[in-house]
View 1 (cartoon, protein in one colour):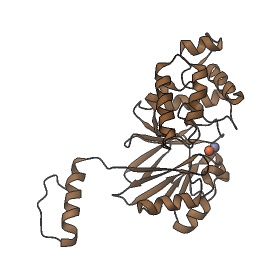
View 2 (cartoon, rainbow, N blue to C red):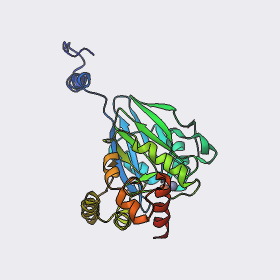
View 3 (tube, rainbow, N blue to C red):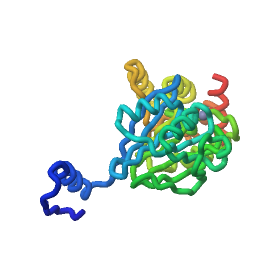
View 4 (cartoon, helix red, strand yellow):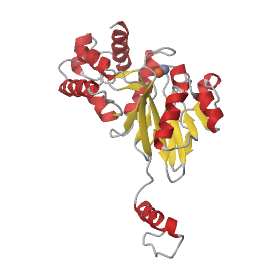
Length: 284
Ligand code: ZN
Ligand code: FE
């Protein structure tokens, strides 16, 4: 559509809204609508929707009923599931949702055999076109061996599953601390303003632990207060941003002299600092 629209008589029922939408659309980037909702005990479901292209993806599918309800609430029709990793609290809804909607299930190639209903298997450096948006795939192993993250640069968002959490990171079930550190290093290299959606609402417990690692961090202290307020009102602490995590997440702050000193590891490699913080959290 040209930027200046010569209004010609068209079907009256379409004229007003469609011309208005087109005039806007010509001047702005395509919009990705995002709807986050809690499900299971502490998971988040996320729906992303490109209205113009009429596509809707569920980021993981923790449980069919909650995803179905969120779709109904938004009036969106499921076309895709973008899976981050094979755990049941991320894939439990795959088969039911696929049989109801015929949606395309995208997921990590390295664990494709464990992703119910997978149609498209992707790995590091691959891209997947979702409506108007290119999703770039990053291998982020650690929590599971084949975990992937979807980064949509034009929407400024990343879906990190159980790799990165607000003030935390996933447990190392299937890979080493060194490899998880490499995965987190990819995420912190994304543009700082990138909004990061995560698989779980663990933030308040993470804040409590983070304060034992870097108690004198002002940004962490004020964030912990804000988190307590949000949670007391039952509100989500996610999405977060890369910038916020870099200033307050102890798992990412391997360069902090205060953390290195506290751990007695001043001269060690970043991944070793990370490994020690992870070990302490596991034992907390
Ligand atoms: Zn998981
Ligand atoms: Fe999970």
